[in-house]
Structures are given as structure tokens and as C-alpha cells.
Image (cartoon, rainbow, N blue to C red; front, side, top):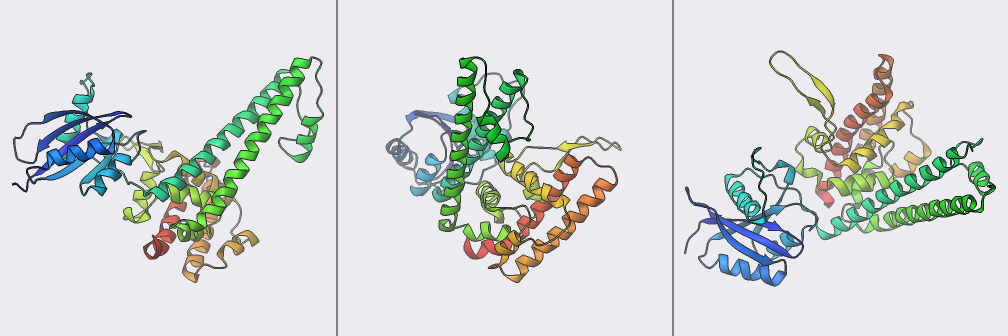
Length: 369
């Protein structure tokens, strides 16, 4: 019997899992165990065989399309398992050979060395909400693509709208268009129906989010951050679903970096060069934040919509929300006055908005999350 830890690297695929292990003792060599089926029974058998000597088992595998099923099953069996970020795994530049065996052995070795970065694993309810908000985001992209296809079709035939785009008058004008050839008329009608189906799907998903958020354990966080200007129910649900636990960020700067809103930098010696934002974080949450930041180009004021959102919220959250409005609206005016481009200003506002979201979420989350 031994108390040593056995570090196990898993290269997980749809049907198989390549397994490698290394003991925690100094100088121990990495061993390849073999390939097992990606089933709960095979994982249970693996754990029994590896724990026969009484040592602790620590597993890891890369985050990927197979999700968190393996991690949850190993956790239920009483073992520790990390899902690691693939982009943060140290790799040799000149290593051009990639196999399941080598990947599993590399994971085991780097896990023992403490060089892996674990990602946050949501619970099943949280993952379900994240799937829903991501589906709506995909539906919105499909809708924009369908609309652009119709506008491009009309542009090719020299037809332009006198009523703007996607207003009531524009939709009526689209329905009254006629074409010389029946094939063109059929294509036009099919594209219109495609847009209507996409709009209906977006409406259904938005309604589903509104109905399911109150049943979510993080519903108080979603409700609280809606006190901020530009953060509607859908935006709040997306941010909370993608970020998850705000408590894992010690300060708002860490959350800004996670969302890819920090400026990039390439400095050397006395030369300091800063570039555009890194965009290395969660793209969906970052997009929603930038869209919300556009509302701060107007003067600070509490509209009826915001007043309705804040009526059941405590006074400290209202104070933070008003402080955010005053600061961010003034920040927008100041940056644009010195000649900064509007898109760059809005990204800067979005970065500061993250700080206020973090502050409000931390006021609510410890009580309910």
C-alpha cells in the first residue's frame, strides 16, 4: 500500500480513450497503459485496476467536443479529474509527431509537473443554459446571413429599398416586389420564407430563455446585472452562462483578460508597444458586452425600462448601476472628444463595464450560487 499519487493522462475520443500514467516519485517514467472504450463501465474498471495499490489517482484530459462526461463520471467515482485548456498546454515547437499514445503520455507528464491549466467545469444545469444561449446566438447569425443573402440578391438585380432595412414598410415593400422571370420570383419568395423561419426561431429561443432563467440557480445574478444600462435579459443570461462562477476571478482585471478585452502588448527594453485587444477569451460574451457598451454614448439617465428592472433590487446594486452610467457615459464623451474612433471607445467602455458586472455579481453570488 502506498500514499503516492498516480497521475493519469487521458486522450479522449468519441469511442476510445488512450491512457498513460506516471507515478509521483522523482525520476519515474511515463508508462502507456493502453486504449479503453469510452464507456462508464470501462472507466470504472480502469479506476479499479489503477487503484489496487492504494495510491491516489489524479486524471486529466483536454477540453474538446466530448464535453465533461468523463470528468463527471470520474468525480462520482471519487477521483480528481481536471479538464485542461488545450491552448495552454506546453508543446515543443519542433515536435511534428502526434498520436493518441504520445498525447496521453504528454498529458500525464505535464500534469505531474503542474504545467496544465484547468478550465472551469459547469454543472449540468448550467451547461444546459449555456447550450440554450449559444443556440440563440447561432440562430441570430443564421438570421443575419439570410437577410444579407436577400439584400445581395436584390442588389444584383439593381433593386434598392426606399424605406431602409427591415422596418415594417421595408417588409411590405419586399412582399410586393415582382420579377420578370418566374425563377427569380421563386428565389425571392423562398428567401423571404427562410428569413421568417429564422426570425420565428430567434423569438422562440428568446422566450425560452425568459421562461427558464427564473428556474436557474444563478437567476439572482442574471437579475442583478440587468440593473446596468444595455444589459437586457438575454445579454445578462449570455454573460452569466459563459462566465459561470464570478468567484473564481479574484479581481475584475482577471475577468477582463478572460474575456479577451485587455490590450495586447509587445514591449522590449525601453520600447513599449500596445496593440488591439487580445480577443483570446470567450467570443460570445465579449460580443454581447461590446453591443451593450454602445448604449453609453447617450447621457446618463434611468429610463423606465431600467427602472422596471431595478424595482426589486437592493439599494447597493442600484448605486453601483448608477455609478456605472455616470462614469461610462462621461468616459465615452471624453474619449471621443480627443479624437478616438468610436469602435475603439466602445471596446474601452466594454472593458470597464466588465468591472461593474463583476462587482454586482460578487454582491449577489455568494448568497445564491
